Length: 153
Image (cartoon, rainbow, N blue to C red; front, side):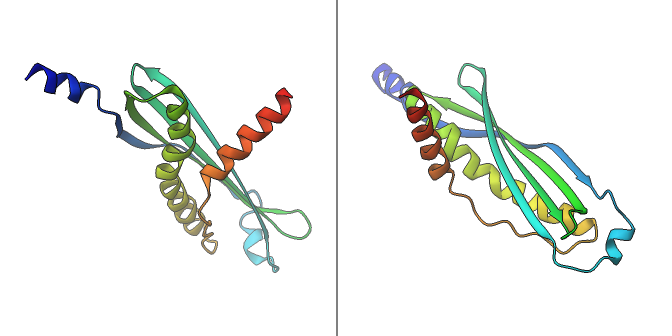
């Protein structure tokens, strides 16, 4: 029986402990006049990820999405920033694989929540919804790894 317990203790663990909205901001600097403006805005989206170790086996991961819409004359229609976070338990996994989980798996879990918060917030501000396309966090991770290797060379 003790061998079964030891085997169970050595099983890899990856679980979601808590998902939460860490930060949400919306700026509409030219309201209410911006709603009278005509023209198709240029929408810019930036995504950043960050992860930190909280304590043994527990990690915090955050995905920050910043969406800015500007008219042709560089007048900002709105600026929306959302940071969706989560606490994850990761145990009995190699350090290299932990980095991969924090850079790819955790953001893949968090991004749909951030995407919904962006769309909802912008719609509540009186603008048409901004539907963000899915993001390939694995490609972002690999690109970061290649840039890091190129920087070290």
